[in-house]
Image: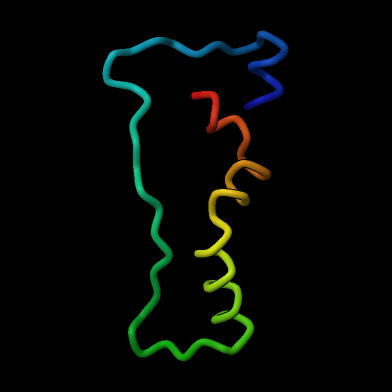
Length: 63
């Protein structure tokens, strides 16, 4: 929606109770056995979450 905001095709409405804040979680079954690649990705993601958010979801920083 970043492009639509920039072009003025949509706009943000100011609401006292917004934006809603939420924590995102990665979940899986306890008995699930992860491959080394998945384990490495989860570890990397936990260490680099701020950079990932700013690079891939820059609009979230302005809300």
